[in-house]
Image (tube, rainbow, N blue to C red; front, side, top):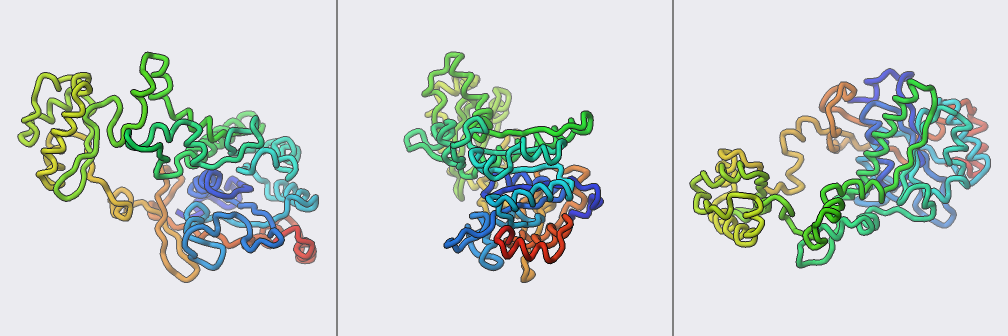
Length: 408
């Protein structure tokens, strides 16, 4: 896939005052559809060495001082402009960009308390273009403007850490920044909805994503159960076990671990018909509730059996019984999974090194070639002159703005 899959004059244009992960992940999904995404970053702060998005400097340096490894994947294929929105001239320039570039979507994950000061609140920007789609992510939404958002904090607030980890151990955060990515996906989906509605009504809209609310929306198999008789202890941390379906767990094998998931009594019946596990055939295990009652001994008995066999042998047995299962894939082995290898995206560093990127989550007609490539993540302010020129500013005007610190 390339951004040229969509004719240049028909691509939706996204302007995004973005940093960190949540909104950059959302706008990266727009890039994967071939949309034009321009990331808006602040001009340098006096006395601070780093410039723009702090995530530019996280991870190993890859291409110069301002493109480190953590930054690259979610910013490939974007353009970068640096404007001082604290200055009146900068805010006027933002309005001009929205008008002249015919921006369809404005995104931000700036704290809501700062929106009006920077001139990026929905009312201000929709005065510039009434059919603009405005989309923001913050910790708890615009109703709580002073609350800073950070994925692990929201995991703690929304109960995720109380649900994650070993039952005998401390609360734990998820291994990936789940809430950031969930919030980004919500922006992606709701912007698509808003644009569809705009096609019918001609009107823009506002998308206000609360990271905390989005996180709690993912608890339908926990919170309602408290109102239906489940004590809190029944829903707490359970390690690798499933809280309701037994047995679902990670089990040792002679050369590592395997995860299996038995989600019905029918699957259990097929499971114990296999010679490897026939010793577990017992009336007390015939139902899920029976297996739940005796789950500690059942998990131990399964582990005793699997630990005597290599992973491949256990996989073959589970496949014969049509039991969902997987060996535990090391993260470095994920690239080699066939469904990843065949559709991973790619980018190329300025010095010619190929970097693989995670595939787009869904195949659609918009994605073009399955093994697509995206331009490398932009350096700080890389496209400032080009984008301002496109908005009608001449070289002298741009130089004056730069000398005045309004752009970088």
